[in-house]
Image (cartoon, rainbow over all chains, first blue to last red; front, side, top):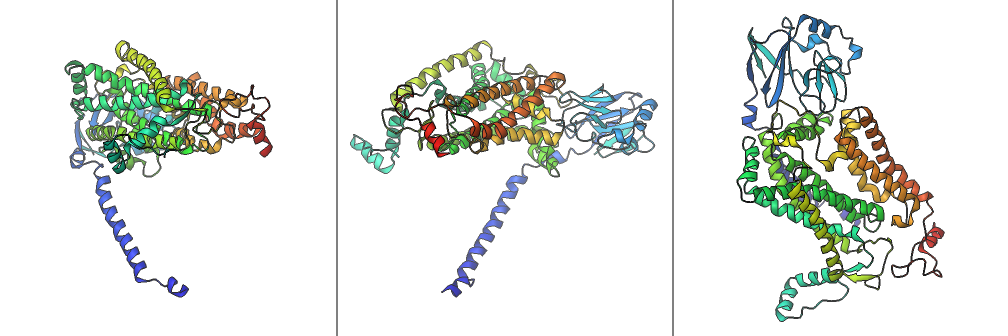
Length: 173
Length: 419
């Protein structure tokens, strides 16, 4: 009797096969129910925005909406660029060179998501201890390159994918 | 269920009850033996049931006029306020009703903490109650998003971004919650769907909460086990129903005071500005009932750490029955614990206050002190005080207070001997 119990019999096989097929079936039904909550085709279609930058004076910035989020386009002065490049890497919680945050030859243009990396508020420009941005929600300070310097935010403000279509137009996304 | 078999008097009643024993259930609820010394802190269960039903009824009515679309939601709420017959009344009852609901649930929870109602054999009642509390917070948060004002939008942004603190998959989860690349129309739409669903989940849990309560019966102010039914108990109806009804009336007067005289005092004026994804309000504050947790979140200078601590502040309550080592339930007989209980009350109130203030200077210091005490209270004070404390003598029964029954040795002393 005990020998027979140890053997895998027809019934064990049927149980295992049924559970497996059942699990796959349940998974196949659950996944569409979960995935329907991800951004739909209409949301994905809003993935690029073109911006005219010909009217922006040095030292000024504009804010545009891309994928429902604000994007800061700042035309920096030479002093601001120099200030951003003179920061020691040791002083940065999330070390990143200013050179890596702008396009080569277009250093005056800082294009970044105007979204605080802490909990998603929009930081205020020309505020804070580092001549850059300050988030009013929980007190994160960003420098003139949009890098986190002080406060609860873990990382620098994000640089979106963008390119210069021509000298007057930037395509974000 | 019931100690004695219930037989309906009428023939039709008997016929129906044999097929579905609803009348037996009704008889059980009517006769349900209740400790005769329940004080007014025990009336909040009934008050909370009233709050839930009020929210469901007013909510269903509001949903007949509200439009869950980013372009139309704000205007539809103003339409309810100005055009819909009695719309202002129904909306003010619903929005203030949320606050009254939380007011009642906090009193209910602290009642449990004081009288040890979470302890054996009532752990499951406690845990179901906490699940209800979690669902209440989810429902309240999503409801606050629906008017699509500035606080709605930015509150939704901050809270959903909490999930982006999760390593590796955080951003994917946040995008999934949004259904977009920021808080947007898909977010509003799903929040409306879930906001409508959650109250009915709560209703289901309330049934389980009461069911679990009716197995051991009510705890009581002296916290001792009592025989049921006995001279220590009274039938639920009419003794408790009338007491509950009186407390409910007083509660409704306060409720009506808010609705009719200061309907916006608990809200934030920024929510009468339509949502603008380009401008964050200067001070984002959640509704008052979430402020203590917000203070804990902001007290940590690290994103993931803050989020973990905030959620821990709630989830630590789930293991409370096993953190508390005292065998005596009621704080009435626990002179040491009683002091810590009031420190906790003050601590939570203080956290609520600093949660509404800017996270800087003295407020940040207070938030950190408050957060540290909050966790110490549950992790250290609860287990240690349970061991060290010399509890006061406990009465043998509700009918025989400890002073008059001098000949009887107290249960507390008996327990000490066992330990």
